[in-house]
Amino acid sequence: MNRPDSIAPEMVPPWIAAQTAELLAQRGHAWLLAGPSGLGQYALALALVRAWLCEHPSPDGACGQCGSCHALAVRTHADVCVLMPETWMLALGWPLSEKAQGEIDEKKRKPSKEIRVDAMREAVEFAQRTSARGRGKAVLVFPAEDMNHVTANALLKTLEEPPGEVKFVLASESAHQLLPTIRSRCLGHAMRWPDAAASEHWLQSQGLTEAQAQQALLACGGRPQDALDLAHSGRDPGAWSAFPAAMARGDVSFVRDWAPSELLSSQQKLCHDLLALAVGAAPRFFAARDLKPSASLRTLTQWSKDLSAQQRTIDHPFNPGLLQEALVGQAQHVLAAVR
Image (cartoon, rainbow, N blue to C red; front, side, top):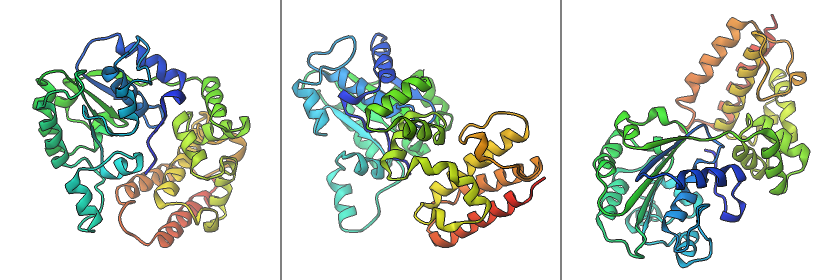
C-alpha cells in the first residue's frame, strides 16, 4: 500500500495550489477529483476542505492561521468527516470512531482496507447535524474507489440531496471503478500533470538532490508525490536502474526487503517498458540504457497477463519469501528468453 500524499499547507506543490484556486472559483456541493496515483488528489481534497471551512479564506484557499485551520491540522475539526479505509486513517493520523478503535485495540479484527458501511452511515448522520463552527460541513472520501456497492449506495441519496451546508469531495485514483450514479452526482476534475521541471524543483525543495529527484521521478512515471513517497520509504532511488539486471540474473537478495506488492508493481513497470521497446516506443520507467534486448512480444505479453493475474491475490497472506522467489524466478525465465 502506498502512503497517500499527506502534505502540510505550507508544503503544497504549486500545481496543487493552482488547482485549489481554480476549483474554489466554481460553485458546486460535490467534487470528484480523478487521476492516477501520485498527482495529489488527497492534498487537493484537503486544501478544498480547509478553504470551505476557513474563517478568513481568500480566493487562493485557507488562511492557515484561524481556529478552523488549526482544528483541521490536528484532526479535531467537528465539521469535518473523513471517510477512508481504516488503514489509511491510521497512517494519516485521523481518529477512528470509539467503537472501531476499541475493536482493533482488543484485536477483535484488523483495520479495514475498504471504507466500511458503518462509517458511511455515521457520515450520513453527520451530514444531518448542524454545523458546530457555523461555516458549514465537509465530507472527504479517499480513495473513493474503496467504497463497495453497499457503502456507495449508502452515500448516494445524501450526495444527491445534501441537507444544509454540507459539501463533499471524493478523491480517486481509479474513478472508473465508482458507480456511475456516484460519478454523475459530482462535478468532475481531472488532476493535472505537472511538467518535469516543476516536479524536480518541488522534490528538491523537499530535500532530494537533483539526481535523486530525477531518478525517483523516472521510477514513478513522472508522478511527483509517488516519487517523494519513494524517497521517504528509505529505498535508494539511485538503485532503481539496477533492477532490470537484478531480475535478469534472478537475484532475490536485491528485493529481499521489498513487500511482494512493491516487487510486483516494479516488475509490471519493467514489463511495460520492455513491451514499449519491442514496438519501437520510448520506455517510461527506466532509462533505455538499463534495458537489455529481451524476449519476444508474445512472451512479454503473456508475462504482462500473468502479472495482472497475480495482482488480484498479491495481498493474500502468502509466505513473502516464497512469493518473492516465484516472482523473481518468473522474471528471470522471461528475460532469459532473448528473441
